[in-house]
Amino acid sequence: MKQFDYVRPATVAEAVSAAAQPGAVYLAAGTNLLDLMKGGVSRPDRLVDVTHLHGLDQIETLADGSLRIGALVSNADLAHDANFAKSYPAVAEALLSGASAQLRNAATVGGNLLQRTRCAYFYDTASRCNKREPGSGCDARDGENRGHAVLGWSESCIATHPSDFCVPLVALDAVVEIEGRSGRREIALEELHRLPGQTPERESALEPGDLIVAVRLLAAARGFATHARYLKVRERTSYAFAVVSAAAALRIENGKIAEARLALGGVAAKPWRARAAEDVLRNVAPTADAFQEAAWRALTDAKPSGDNAFKIELARRIVVRALTLAAAGTPARIPALPASPFASTSGAIHA
Amino acid sequence: MNHSISLTVNGARREFVLDDPRVTLLDLLRERLHLTGTKKGCDRGQCGACTILVDGKRINSCLALAISHDGADILTIEGVARGDQLHPVQAAFIAHDGFQCGFCTPGQIMSAIGMMQEAQAGNDPERIRECMSGNLCRCGAYAGIVDAVQEAQGRMDETNQRRSA
Image (tube, each protein chain N blue to C red):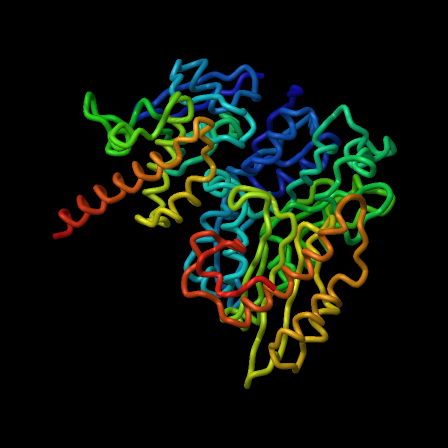
């Protein structure tokens, strides 16, 4: 690990100022950053430790009914917050399907949003990677790439964003609050992550010094609470990143879908909102045919980036199954194996 | 630049001067305090051998910078027994052969203690397996580990019932 300076700011303003310097990065729990630093993938000159800042670890219901989640709330504390889990169950299920209990206890909300891809070529400093070293090339393009992107990728980069948490968040129109050099601003989570294009090293809309201070879930998103699921195919049942995942949320009135939300994980460099699929589900009955049509629409633009054509068909099936599970109703308790297609209480047969 | 931090480790308050901010909690415990029960397996947060409790919660100590945990209360495997009296989870691991080579065992036990405090799994073996998935055992003693955790959980439930009765 490269030597670095350690700074512990007393206020958010001090943090933003300290992190705006070239070579500086924020340290929250460090569950991803330390791993990257140990491997020489991240080589910061300065760590700005935000874990001792006050007021960023609260979960609060605002006057308008939305839920404001501080950036330093741990993944575990959020998932087990009763009000949150009841109001936004697919988000809780996604959180509990990610990483391990130890990592969820440490990892923060803000850190989860900004975690880096797990592309093996990004992690291997002997490989060419445009994200790690702009202009060097992409060894994933002709390498072991069965897990790579099928949507939104470019010749420069075919990496995927690994977060589970972000998938239902983007489906539910979550908002990110950012403190920067010119004050406070907020953006839709959907605008936070960037597709690679020619600049895969620029992963987010954040500017130097920008600090995510909170994520907000709107009151309207509670309307999906009774029909919301997250479903995640992994190469083992627990403690693995998604090959493909989907968050599905429905608002069902009088036997018809009044509104649908759908997002995919593991398929692109950002959590992938499938609006075209949502559109075909408006004012129709929640039937297998409707879900098949939605799945087809969600993957219309998909194309393989390597040995991963299977992910397109897999994603279609996961979409159908996630929608089927959502229509069946949110279970009273999160299944023993969260988001797993093998969960004994999943309630849906293979699509 | 030197940094001074203070930690409570297994009930005793300790002061440290760190001449390098790169020191992890794992390395601090092993190299400075010679508490070598906490194991360095992968050192990358993948195996769980380094699991300790920080402020009552289980984490991977290999991915935690000591300097960032100034003021924390730490419990390691060396601090769970009361003298010669084993912690119920330790006793259950012996009773159920919850190990073979033993390298992952301190992490497994600390993880199980943390899991029981989280109270999410109860006595359900499927939930116990899921909640313990952050601890790998290359000898494959998983069946014994789940049995041990179930027994320890059952004993804790009985004790709690007796207390509340």
